[in-house]
Length: 214
Image (cartoon, rainbow, N blue to C red):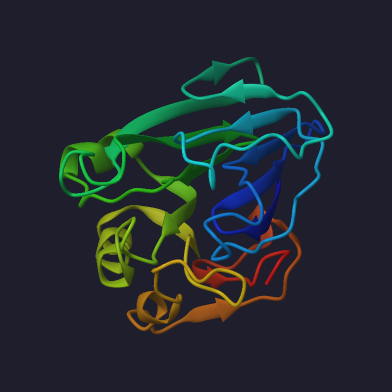
């Protein structure tokens, strides 16, 4: 299984059978000039949507007509399930409801993408997610949990490799923080250049990449 960080919270996963899963595709050049990532014109087989905000659910730039998965998908080689979390600490009343965090199971690997998780997860929610090989977690705060909260959550979960996302960059001036506060909580952080990574070869711990559009 391979994975590529595109930008913001958008990731492409490629299975060993060649199928491609795009998670949380964004709409480019939005939020009144505060979100300047360029269009991502891909041809995935599946588009996984954690929630209905334009920086997470836009398929207008895609060259294919993918299967849209908002909740579940199961076949003989792929299982996608969702765990509900709130978008904020006020049961969704501040930032528009809930998020269907995605769990992907394929090729003997479990990936969890937390979407715009904005609440402090309970032990019961963590138990429902279970052990994962690769965790994608928002760290920028304001719309989601912040760097301190994300670091605390990582330490409560059973995770091999952690990939932070949804943070401020040179192309995103939304009122969210850079990745720095999150990674300051960890002694060992691996910084990688952008690429398509074999998940089985990624180091354990925190992994940071600038994404396709840095």
